[in-house]
Length: 283
Image 1 (cartoon, rainbow, N blue to C red):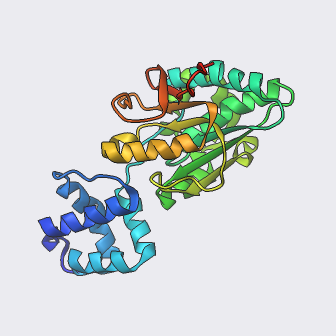
Image 2 (image 1 turned 90 degrees about the vertical axis):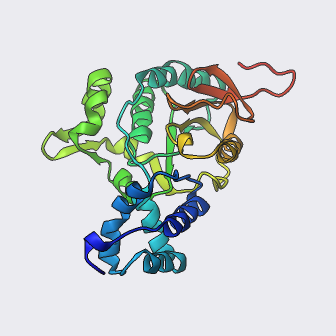
């Protein structure tokens, strides 16, 4: 590859790459994000030894593994344990008891739909594991999905450094003390009972989730903002199809689906349920 200072991304090349990203993931890269894309891909071109973005685009369009690497590089994966405590309080005090009132024979199923490195799925797992230890017959399964294979590998490891745990230590001290083992230097590992009940899968939210699972709570948090309204509606249709009729949907603080055409009814800000069929009230 030519010297790094000579590397540039033309407008047409930028449009081609963001078109590839949108076609593959649904994520929309804004018109003013050329510098961001260049900064995230510069090191990759050095690794692949492509002379310029023309050569790299040719590689991406002919190599599925490189397309996945592109997705890994451009997706945003900032997250941490116990993000937005109010959501977790509702999950603990409302969603779990509501499930237990309706079901006694099957595990509660949870979907962290944009799981990133796993903090959200494992936060749910901690609350569920606490319930399992106190409620005879209760069990659960957590599924985490993401478009990035890189972050899913980190999630499967279940090992975390201190910054990801700050909120949990402050507002979920009992969960941290009970379900995270380790120290500030080596990091902290999620309890084996929780990891054993949690699986992570590569998945594009614009496609139906395989497997036909009926989830009792879905966390779709801080991800819709990266999609157009049309794609948001498509994602929400897929999520709705994977939910039990009495399930809960949790979205991010900066997100709203009120103006979208969906089959969800708002319970309170950030919390929704599948809209009831005509003549059937929400319970």
